[in-house]
Image (cartoon, rainbow, N blue to C red; front, side, top):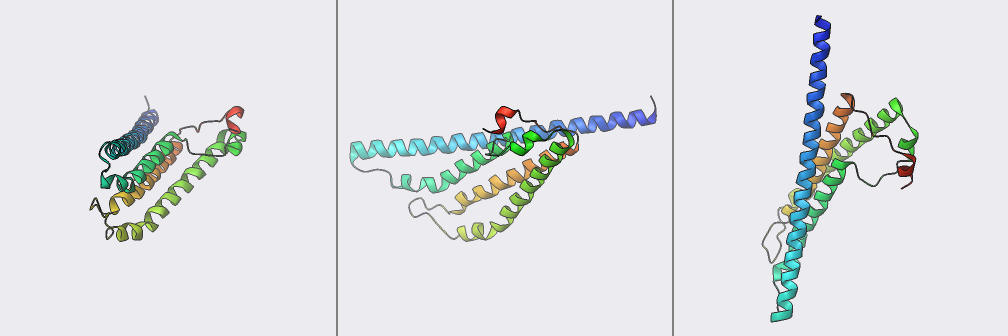
Length: 187
């Protein structure tokens, strides 16, 4: 085996390792979004159910049940955003991508991932004043700082930026973008 062949095999191995690792990281982010969504939804359901039962039986409910959604609902949405990003399931118009094939489709997908990365980083950067201001806001009944709800912004858009970066890396390492069938194009 020549030195050139050894180098090519080494690059193939590195590309394969990168593609596997990047795919694993995206799957881990998907799992984190699913866990967050299930936990938030479950906690909100239980709090609401207990509050309704207590109101029905005792005529009074739990006061914090009215505030818990201020913390959990943003996290539920953030979890959904991460799941959709990891699975490539955001609402999208796929008409252009269904018309393109090969290198043109690859360039379109790379451009979209680059735009998603830039937008996500911009939102992370511009949300810093909101996060700082929310450290001074406290929920009256729970006594919890609002920053716990607003920090879901950092999770959601940080994960979106990371997924976009990993997708760009995978495209550059040789991953082929998914081609849409005509039936999917107008859905």
